[in-house]
Image (spheres, rainbow, N blue to C red):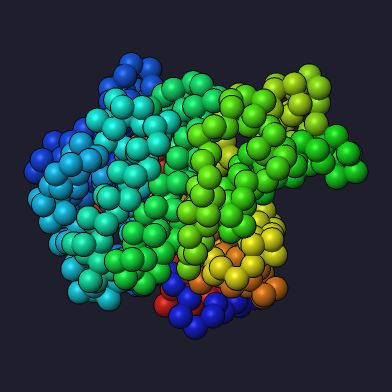
Length: 467
Ligand code: FCB
């Protein structure tokens, strides 16, 4: 294969999220989050696993930063746990919670790694959920207060800020189909949550700007939505509907200060959109400097009157859309592998929402990694396998997606960097510990970290700034 070089100053990094790696859920005054509650609810998470210990990163962050430095990362995207910083989501700030992020930022900077902070990666303080969570407008206001508090402590050293991670998941999986915390199944609540998440983003972005933050952005998981049959008008209509519910519902208010008319009509068929108040869309469109995109897999749909739809994850698509089962080689998540979808998505964002630089804030794959002869299974309970993990399937996935990203750059997309998901094997939400996304293997019994072959491969990519 040909050699590819990335632009000078291209950022190479890795991403994680607080609840997935930190553990220490009861240390130093942290309050409970909706994921603590949800993971303790029988039947919600694989084998009832929780983030109580996870990768114990809270206590091992210094070693983890050393590992990042060894791999040559120039950027590290982590999330701040809201209930660690503000146990009730409103009211008193917990300085000991902020101490942790203060130390982490210093450790990163000390090794020349640029911290990229995500303020909300799904771990809402339980107290706020008890008051309605993202269905309640006040949550958006509390979020801005929390954002300002975090900036007040580490804003002197952190240049890059991301408000939300994948609000599509928070809203539709949290309140629509209930697969994620807080586990609510109510299509109207899902749309209400979309709006309040976006409002929270706008209010936080404004607060961060006022406080002097350098780069402010948001991370979405835009879908590359494809028709089953490119020549079918019915399939094109299905694409438009699904694109509206996953992409334009976020992108249009963010970059055009208005929800799309067809999406508003769709919402109104499910819930009166009285929660959208005058001025909200303008706030949501507070200018941002960077759009983070997470990409894993494409979405194929067909227009069918008897289509099962996407359930609560795509409210109102039943009787209109059939989501096609994934085909071809799949990852351990059952996700289809289609690197061209990344190129298409980046080009589409650049064309339809021009002027904002893009950063791939997540891309990666779970595979049933085998270590040594014994193999490393997936769960917390099994003994450690011997030897490094030869994850050639992950290397192939990453290589193909980096080539796809490079194609987009060559076609003029302003892509600033790539962050692999994830640095470490971690708590994969409802899947618990059985899905491994890390380029570094974690033995959950000993907390030993072992770079997989993909980590060494990535190290080489970074040092060459190319493939
Ligand atoms: C994304 C999440 C991230 C991780 C990956 C696999 O949707 O942002 O936390 O779970 O999927």
